[in-house]
Amino acid sequence: MIAPYFVPRRRVGSLRPFKFAIHLKQYGWNPTILTIKDSKNKLSEQERTLLDGISIIEITPPFDRTVKQGNTFNEKNKTSSKSLSATVSNWFDKQIPIDSWMMLFRFKYNSIRKNVQQINPDLIWSTGDPWSGHWLGYKLSKNLSKPWIADFRDPWTLSDINLRDRSSFSSKRDSLWEKKFVQNANKLTFTARSTEKLYKDHYSLHAKTDTIYNSFDDTISEKSKSWEVDFDDKYLNILFFGRFRRLSPAYPIIKALHNLSSKNTDALKKIRIHSFGEMEPEDVHWVEKYELKDQFINHKPVLPQQGTSVLNKADLLLVSTNEKRKYIIPAKLWEYIQVDKPILSIAPNSEIADILEETGTGIQFPPQNISEIAQYLIECVESKKQLFSNKGYSSKKRVKFTAQYTAKQLSKIMDELTVDG
Image (cartoon, rainbow, N blue to C red; front, side, top):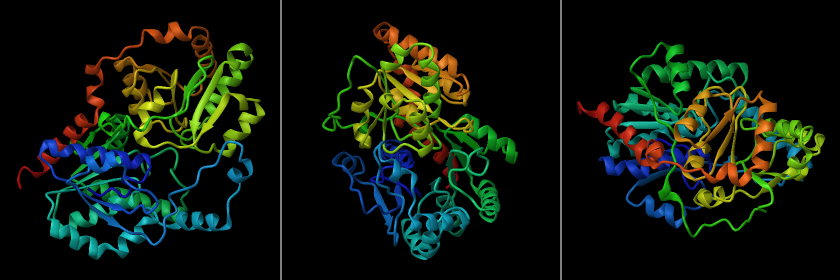
């Protein structure tokens, strides 16, 4: 399993392969993980226990800029400024096809191939982004004549919004590489049916694709890892479990609050939006312009193991995605579904609305429906206890969104690809 990002690296992309890996054994598979070493973080005791018996090959990079120090909401000058070195590095990344981890994988490829040859796996699985993981999967699959599953998660070059800046040269090369990966993978998997359809239509694919949703996992929560922060019950506490950023902006909820302020100032005063890590300069600008600083509370990032404790503090859980991200389902949705709290989704993908309706866990509004969102928030403030008191979720409706279920889906695909072997 090629997972450039894997625990203890604290990124959303690391949790999907982690959840697959720890549950595949119960379906007859013994994974070996190949990942980029994270020298700044360590596995928790719970993670060590869950990974017991799973081999991990770590590639040590000469440097790693993917771990950033978070800023508080008030650190406006730090948030809006960039160092010269960061600017140069970003320009460099922009020019490199696929991503800058490619250089590491190319440099280490011979030793990686020898390691994999010794393991002699039945198949190779890779996940992106970073998309260079697929380059490594493609190369190893070709060189070792092994079946290959390319887990695309979200769209790559077919996305309406780039995950990072690309030059004209790198953008064209990305498209060529993506086409090559799509043509050569034995199976392509995605995290949303809308993404799967996008790729099937664009590349005229048929039985080669499948969707395996992201998932929630009760086994990775640690009761000892409680979050020692209490919310004031006199407010409607809305929680965004992550950092507001370009792909998941605060602007939609900011606009809704601004709209609400003209309808019901008392309701506005009773709303608090909680998030984790630095806020984007553009969002900070609108918060200050609309005089909403009292409504936004910024917390220090927390460990994934604290997720359940954190989410249970909230009255309402917020999903917010960029209005151009029509083909994605944010991974935090599945963490939300795990707990007995209502969800407010402000997103363009109707597939999210279908999931919320199926599980009875919340409501979705398109980002442009600002007035309707504002009115919903007023109702939440005015009827907080009554509105949320009857929430109850059936475990049967949620079972297919568990990590055990999605690992079973992956194992079935793996079984099919290796049946002749």
